[in-house]
Image 1 (cartoon, rainbow, N blue to C red):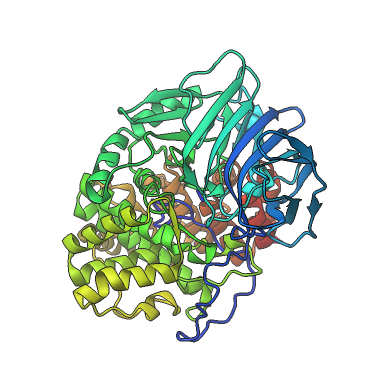
Image 2 (tube, helix red, strand yellow; image 1 turned 180 degrees about the vertical axis):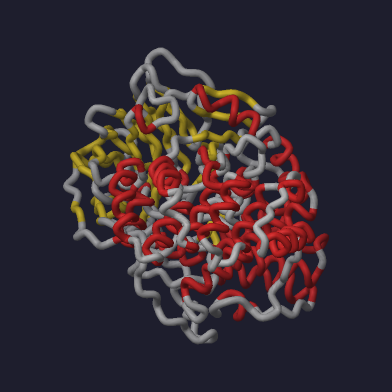
Length: 622
């Protein structure tokens, strides 16, 4: 996928790339005629569609290229061509087969379109069953991050990972790259013998001797969830269906941090039905990974920034696990419907966290999430169409839609329904929703029809769907959450702010969430002397918790207290590639009028970032 939610938990916060936002439509003018068309794919699945793909690839770390072939098993519905999506790929040959005889055919590549790449059109006939495309990746494969040993955690061996969401799989596999199309897949990947390959599929748990790995994914998934990682990896189990892949120096830390993974899986099943993917593992990637986590089925890709040492940031794992139902099992049909993936997942994640850690814990997460949402609405503009749940991303990068709106406004919408009819009935509805739509894709309009039929009409619910889905900002009667622990944090802050007589006694049992609320509540006009005193007492700028240091650095830049901690600021920005942290910090420097420092740090840091992050930072700092 893979914009994240409360500063703590989230998965994948993705900020807009300074592009002009479309004007908000009036709430009654939405066009339902073409709601299922994916404007971000050239494919025409109603004419000819891929149902299964077989990858045969070799990873060459010297040339930084993946090369080989993909064979699509297709269903032809009367077309004379099948169309795939490609971007920055070197296509060498295309062959078609009826299952017994194969022949090479003349393919054509369409004109490149910004954001979405090119169409690859292949002539087929009524007997064509297989289309094989021989190809290699290029330097422009935005999905693929090739890391030198120095960029990894252990600094010994190179590493590769892919990030497909939203439309980057087409930069490493010629495919019909739309979330509305589901495929099964198998793969044979050849890697250097001292490395191991894993995918979003059935995975090996030990390294083999020949460096050739075979993978099978029998459940149909959208192409953005096809994922590959290659590195110096080891596996350790946590429970009977859960485990960790990581570099050797990280694996024990991760096993400790994510000790509750099996319990999370059991809590999720208790809520919304069986886990249908057999195994749930997490791979901890090097620091250049641009997101908190990516919900690749069977194998969540995760940032090392959630290894806080005290299990305080594991809501992210609950979030990615929840995607096994919302997003992976029931998928948004287009990127305009992104909230169907993320709003449900945030709601579900918090239900998992409540089952494990209690109601007050989740109130803190939710309150932080609402703060993020209100900041996002302020940034986008309270009348912006980008604050609708149903988006309009035609002619734009779908990445623009991956903001806190989908996550937090989507979650609040579900909370509003739960408040009206009660938790028991709402849980029953969600369980049925996941079961009725498993391994299917859904548009917002199809969801509306379903929710009216199953919930709103039978329960005589009074909820303004237009206000939630097709209107900007937040409906006035949206759910609110008050955390008692956050009230205590605020009274502590107000008591000590005037005299700077910070008494650590009052804070000794605070969680990461309380510290985040504390830092966010610090006034923007705090003097440099007072900021320095705070930092000396609590050691924020030297914190080993990435959430805390990121929040503190952002607050410090806003207060003008950042030249004093410029080494810590630069160290953090150079060593972390998670876009959720990078965007606010570079943006704060720019707002503070210190674009020169932002650019100076970025020049050093840029080689360590994934293309997803550099695209955003390039636009922000240009």
